[in-house]
Amino acid sequence: MIWAYLYNIVFYASCGVTVLATILMISRHNAVHALLYLIISSLSLAIIFYLLGAAFAAALEVIVYAGAVMILFVFVVMMLNQGQRSVVHEAAWLPASGWILPSVLAAILLSLLLIGMYSDQPLPPYGVHGVAVKEVGIALFGPYVLVVELASFLLLSGLIGAFHIARKMPSHMSSNTLEEVDHG
Amino acid sequence: MSPVVNNLLNVVLILVCVVFGAALLTWLERRLLGIWQDRYGPNRVGPFGTLQIVADMIKLLMKQDWVPPFADRLIFIVAPAFAMFVVVAAFAVIPMAPGVGVVDLNIGLLFFLAMTSLGVYAVMFGAYASDNKYAMLGGLRAAAQMVSYEVFMGLSLMGVVMLAGTFNLRELVLAQADGWFIGPQIVGFFIFFMAGIAESHRTPFDLPEAEHELTAGFHTEYSGMKFAMFFIGEYVSVLMSAAMITVLFFGGWLGPAWLPPLGWFLLKTMTLVLLMILIRGSLPRPRYDQLMTFGWKFMLPLALINLLITSALILI
Image 1 (spheres, rainbow over the protein chains, first blue to last red):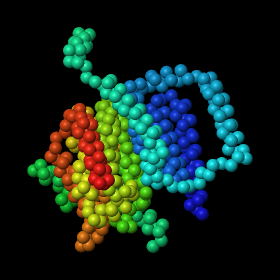
Image 2: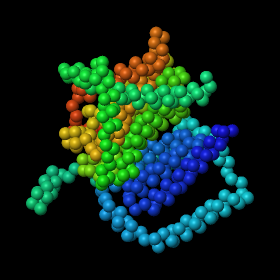
Image 3: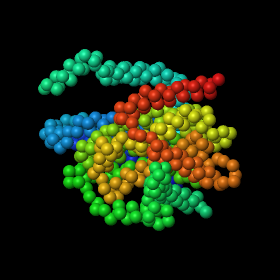
Image 4: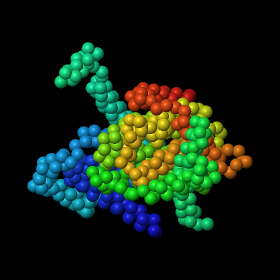
């Protein structure tokens, strides 16, 4: 009995944290703080996945989103290192009046969601049902193999693009640019 | 003993042992490095210098707990605590012996990988919050290095997962009853060992805090207990790498009956820790681009080839 209560408390707490962190992520002026909230949001989302029985999805959420994608974001933001000046800029670019229209649109979406949730239509059963890693793997390489292949195409093209951008200049060109820098 | 009390006892004892073990490791490492380099190392405080850690702890506790005025205050304070938290949390899934271990997760191995990948944040945000050029450079180096080495850290473990058919660490140990995975997965062991050293950024992979180039790297601005958190966190992650290698490649607690299971686990882990200290004492630090080239052009293909051969052999 007590475990069911605890389960509910943890579930709703992590839901609240996710929503709150996402809102804060949108409204922060400091880019690093915004990223920090996004990381917290994906971590609490992982907890929700875990509680719903999708342990593998939870682990992937942390490893891929929080552990790899977000790190690259933070990496770029740190490299640009805008500092306090950009915070002032952001604050100037986002006046309070700019929030009105997005808030109205979001409110409409929220009301639609609430109507959908509280209408008489039966909800899909979301009861806890653990999905093992093996089932996910079989699904990925069975019915969804085409999607996996498409995703790998996308990754390959990204890789080729990165390789092209990062390619070394031919030696005569790079020495010219170096000289220009020296004289400049 | 009721299961709840048993669990609590497990949690508290493992936490205390891990943190104190890591503290003791600072003394052990200095002492061993001293011996291997023909000098004494810390030998004044207590018998053989064992009380040196107490002296260090008093010194660190007595230091002023200072936050630089230009730092991002909250992140500056949270970062070292997070560094400590992730490595200690990862210890929760390590099965030390039958009945000894905090949780028995079905995705134990993935949990470990998730925690190590979160460890980068402590370093990055610590560096960002310090608002210091050396710290920033160290943080960027650490982020690039840890992200690159994580890629094949995960890949090197998949061979073991394929052989055992599970992500559960306890079942992984039991699957080695007929033979340790170090035999069929010697390449995976080598890659994981290297990646483990790189993840805890120790020599020869300690470029994020290379003192000749970057003062102290990402923790330049840290002092007192906050510095100690980063420092001890690093030693906890050394222990964790060793424990993880023991579980995955050396059969965990399995061994002949003349030593209790926990004894076997500790013996194997300590041997690996000594090996890591010996590597620190003997290898020079590479240049940063050499480190990255080594990672992407040698270790990653090696991990993939290992995976390919392992899966082919399993299918045959």
